Image (cartoon, rainbow, N blue to C red; front, side, top):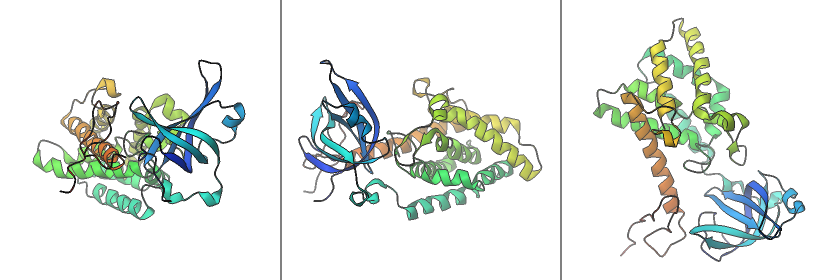
Length: 323
């Protein structure tokens, strides 16, 4: 039987297969009993799961980041699909197919890395090109960039997703900047490269995706300030010239304002043309990735519409079928 992925389930399906476990919690219910709540993930995304009448032993039988064998059934609850577990155990190595949990293959990631270097080395402003080179020469940073996801759930939430997202936004800059000569394309390219760069340390992603302590306490926009300062010092050492303070401030502004609104976590509203452009290009790529995944993974194969998404307040149109 072929595998069904986490985001493809319909209501009342029997499920017996391996998932990656995360976010497990043992919670009391109104009757004084306990239930186990967790996330079950594969390369398509994740699904909420429950084990009713759970015990401390059930909770301790596996760890976050373990592959687990699940037997259970799906249930649509308040518009969201969840998996009700009958039994759960650590999966044996022979039961795990790593391909079920890998969205991007190594060859694809290598191509993104090559394209990133190509774009950055095409920057004409010497100070910005030197700064970019300091990141490219940092083997530890680049190794993390090729593995990191762009987020926990919302978009590009898989290993290699951050690099894919960064390169996609930079490609958008190359398309849009020539249409608006008032934009400094080199500044905007650096902003696109660095806007999420500190997610390499904000998130943990060896198997499950979770926040590091530093990421939980500070967040990637705050963490980016110290990362950028350190690389500017390296760039000054490399070039023998001081890095313009005003340029450093503008780069930092793009990073801390790229979420666009205070309610979405921006420390500042975008106040430069490049910051305004970065916010919209970043949001465009994130939304297209997120919505495309929701449409592709929709279990309603006999409908032109997805199920209703409570967090979006809408269904999504998949397009008319073949006539």
